[in-house]
Image (cartoon, rainbow, N blue to C red; front, side, top):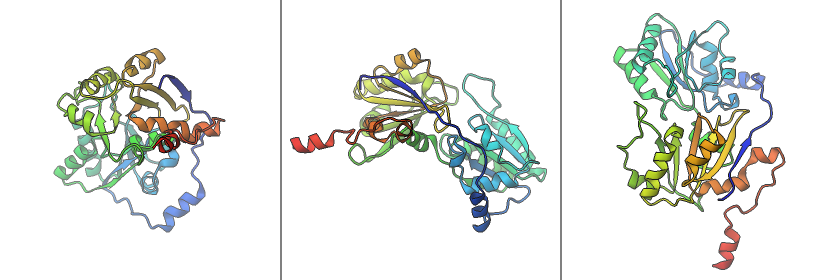
Length: 301
């Protein structure tokens, strides 16, 4: 892949909730949010339309919403109008509350009899520290419920027209965090096995270490010309996509001044974007019917 391009996602979205969604929540007899409970809820990658009915139900009932940095503000508009909104976001390189303090706050609020909604971007159990917070609640004797959300490594890439699996490309995918708790490159991972064993690799929170990670993967057998895509602000109205290659990704990111938050995918599934960029098609892009050139390969065979 030789052409590098940044494509902005246009269009407008509204924060209104269709009446049919409210009606569905009622008809499904969704659970009651009891005082003294904490619900760990995934808000999805950003687009409010990707909220689950369980998430919407939690927002409508919560007394306190403790939300993180990747929760889109329009999602908060769905909350109970009497709910208190408390920001507890953690962003790399910026002053952030410590994880133990966030967990302690959840316990404190629940013990005061509040219905506590811990709202996290994506899915709480996918690089979201939801497991750590849940265990802290268990240790304190606080009842909790988990509400999974759409994770950016699947939903965010889907909005970019990139499937994480495709039977002509891969039957496995590996999700990897791009930094350790202290911000360093996760060198304790088995990079040789990841490089050789997974046709598709999805990197979370890896933008600042992309050069080092790319070098590790190439050193362990990945092609320097392997397709890479980065999706910034996935599913939001200002979503943008940078297509590049493993060997030039870090340079292209710097040249394009491509900023976090971004999800990164490495592998030939990136080629499918030429045929599956459904948002681009809405804006006039002509999609390629055979992005993997399978017909010519079959003819040759």
